[in-house]
Length: 297
Image 1 (cartoon, rainbow, N blue to C red):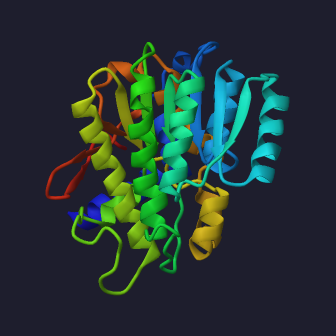
Image 2: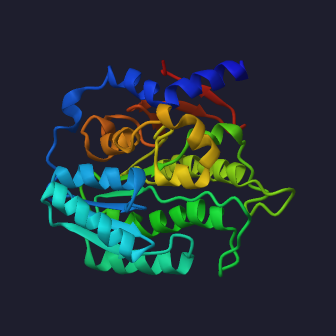
C-alpha cells in the first residue's frame, strides 16, 4: 500500500502529473484583474516565488517581495516590472531565519501598508546542521518559525481587508515524516537535512490547519508545487536534479496552484485549511501523521 501511494505520488509531482491535472483546469479561473490588491511573497527573487510574483504583477496586483539578498531582489524586481509593465513592485530585505528581524519587519509593514494576501514561499534545505545567531537550527528557523512569526504578526492587518488569504508553499516531502514535536531543533541522532526539511513542511501544513480553525475570517491553504526545476532544487539536491531534470516541472507549472489559490474566486469556495496539489485538495492529514492520496490521477 505504501509503495503504491509513493508510485502515485511520483507521477503526480513530476511534469507529466501537472500536464494530466491541467486537462481538468477551468481556464477562466485565472482570467482576473487584481488591481488594488496587495500581495506579499517571501522568497520572491527566484524560482516559484518569482514566477508567482510575475503572474500576479501581470494581473495588476501590488507586489511586496520579501527577500534576503538586495542585489538579487532588485534584479528580479526589474525583470518583473519590465515584463508586466506594473510599477507597483516593492522589495523588502528580511532574513526569514532571524525572528526579531521578521517580527519587526511585519510590525513596520502593517503600520504603513495594506495587505490582502500573504504567500509564505521562502524556504531552505541546509544539509549540515547550522545554528542561527538566535540559537535556532537553520532549517527550522527559516521554514517553520519564520513562517509562523510572519503570519502571526500579519494576521491583524489581514483581518482589516476584504477577502484575505494566506498560502503556504509546503511539500509532498512531508510524506516521509510523521509530526515530531519532541525534537524541533533536530538535536537527537544523526542530522539529515532532507528529513529536517520534510519535517518542517509537515509542520507548515499543521500550522495552516490550526490557523484556519482559529481565524475563520481569513482563508488559509497550503500546497505542494510538485518537483520543479528551480535554483533551490539545483542547489540543495544536485544529484536528484541531474537525474530528473528532463521530467521536472517548469517554475511556472510549480507556481500554478499558488497563483490559483492567491487570485481565483474558485479557490475561496474551498474550505479553509486544506492542502492542495494541481488546484485540488490533495492529501488528508490525520493526527497520527498518516496521509492518503486523494483525487490524483
